[in-house]
Image (tube, rainbow, N blue to C red; front, side, top):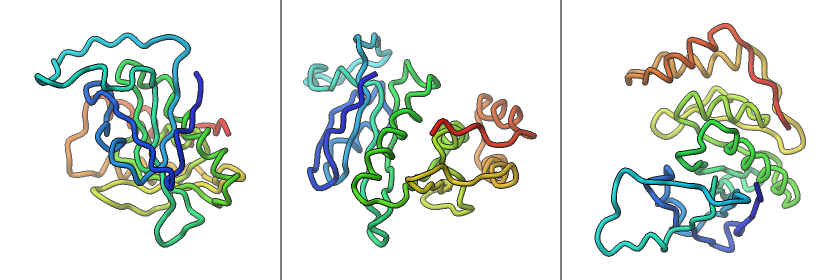
Length: 199
């Protein structure tokens, strides 16, 4: 995969992703955030179940993206880089591209005088993926029941089994119904410590 930084927040880059293949696709067309992408060395085959509305040209979408992330400085803590949206092509989820692109952005953020990176996640799969690139649960929530994870940019965040499991317990204790995949994932990790950081 090839990493490409399309611009920092002040550059106001935009990206048109196919909403049938990428979660949060609409968040990348508004500007105001930095954007980075992973591009494949060969094209990604995608046959959408859902047709596009009349008048929407599929050529308008970026067709060379595997993963994308949007980010900006925290309004009250400018030394903190907020990772806003991480999305991976629907056919390639679970293959490590989310952690890979986040790790690339974290590496570059250190060169721009950021001290830490922060992200809020709304599912246990993202929670696990972010631990793999050195993030740890802060014990805080934001938004609609999103867990806040954070890491310093110069090293992985310290994390122990108790803190890691505290975040997973928040997902287990939610009022909303978990998918069968989420239930199996959480059951599988009930006694484990955090995954090894690939930082």
